[in-house]
Image (cartoon, rainbow, N blue to C red; front, side):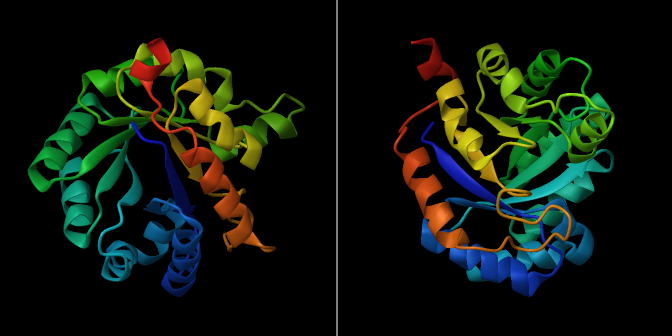
Length: 237
């Protein structure tokens, strides 16, 4: 799969999300994500606003679906999302029905392994249940809690190569990565690079990060796109 840069719009109002999305697209970002904070604050309207302005751009709706999978996938597909996110910790029937809705409404399904006891087995289950992508995810609260207790902050890079080898579908690594680490994820066989909090979004205020963010994003896009095609098949060659 060709390497992709995705920005997670972990913001809480539509005007800021649109302004950040415009800047990201100028910098070369491929996919836009309606982050969970935006969906909580604005619901379907956030996705609709992104689709109205970016007619041809893939839009990920980070629903983190745990139940009611058909309705959530249907609503976001009608709003203009091209990808929806379901949690592996949900009941298998929820994952299966999101996958079915994805096929019916023409959206891809990203399965998120956040909170799984065994991340590798979790990724395999998501693939077996029909997901199109795996999101290998170390959660915000988990990372902060471990660090507050004096432990080492876990990184999705710790098991990323093993997860890529365990599945045939594309993998994305999320959670606590630096910009430099995120850019290197294609080296592990993961073609989808996502930038959100705290890389491009202030993780405490859920506001767009300061500084020359556009130049930073342009540099990331140039380096990630230079990898070309990346994925399980390429990794095994």
